[in-house]
Amino acid sequence: MLNKKSLNLIIKIVGIVGIFSIGIVIGFFILNDTQTNNNYGNNNDPISDNDLLFLAPPITSSFLDEEAGITIYFDAGQSLDLGVAKNEFKTIEEETADYVIGSLGLPNLPETEDVHCLVHKDGWIVCFYLKQEPTSKIVDWNFYSGGILSKTKLYEGLEIIANAYPSVLITNPSYYHYNYQNANKLMIVIDESPTSASDSFNLFLPTEFTFYEKSWNLNGGSTKIGKFSGELNQGITHIISLDYTGYSDYNYILRVDGTEIDRVYRDSQSQGRVAVVLVYYQP
Image (tube, rainbow, N blue to C red; front, side):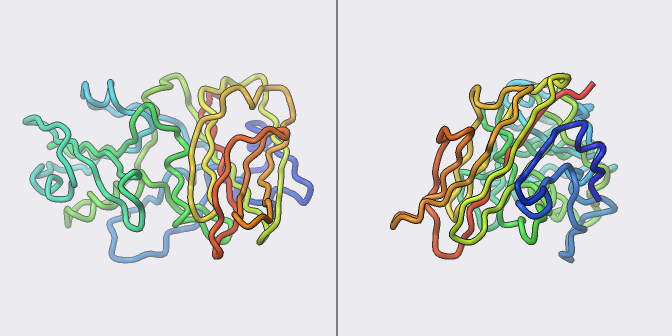
């Protein structure tokens, strides 16, 4: 369960109807994954950890240093046949005697959401998005239900590769962001509107923290992602609103303090949802 005191130290969120009913504050907590026949090991997605810390992978790769952004990885604890991983990749992006990097398609998602993955012969499996992509891309709305985000797209990538090796279990996975090597924390705040209605919450970012990236993921059936550019300042209470227009085009509009950030078209089966994703340093 989320530690409210810990949350208040990180970010103050005030909603008209409260943080647990307006939407979801995912300060690193999820339900246990109930799927079977997968190599989860003893760990679920570490986004569930209230004290999640970014840890740099103990492997070297010029590709990761130059191309990677938000990353998740783990050590399989055994040597890996790179040919097995290559069979899972849609494309091969780089191959050496020690590792192979390729792209992985994710179930029920378009090619634009493909995850990049490095598999090292010594046992390291690293999944990542590219450095120019917003961190909010990791949110997979297919795994958001009942107020819970059960896994990120990057963790799904780990599962695909782990499942290709019968003896590999996902154990002690860690997140890291190559763009922001001084960052030590990640937070995801999700708000879901009532059906065919608008909703909002107030967001305050403490001045004692350093925020490296503030990004968003807006969904109403279709999805858009992006980075905030100056709209979320520290020491100021902002109103984050998810507005349902009610027009024939069924738009859901994301606004900060009344200023439109972007909009998505709503299909007849979807509610509006927005995730605000923060990458920061907490002293």
